[in-house]
Length: 100
Image (cartoon, rainbow, N blue to C red; front, side, top):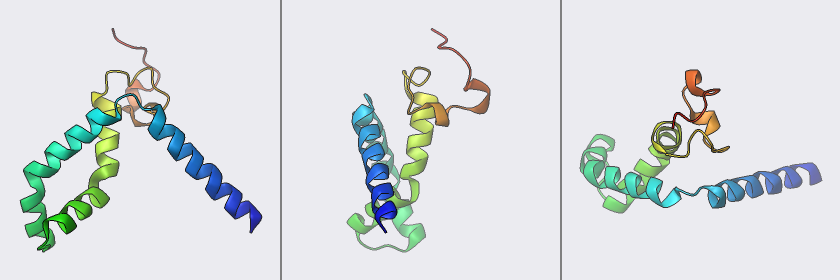
């Protein structure tokens, strides 16, 4: 039981470190917010969700992982120098140096 708790604590600490280590989190959240605002009505309709807040929560729960992969792997200016973004780079770019 102690190992499970220790493992969960370590996992939480790593997530917390990753969030605070990202220099572009605000940019990612702005893009996510813009996309949600442009698509929430269609999302609610397709998922048969009446309430806007419930629709937003469902949208985030469904697609936030995708926002992170696209932003970190393809959009972020620091993606070639960022430890957090390395796993999201396209396969042919994982070993590529910063093109600038």
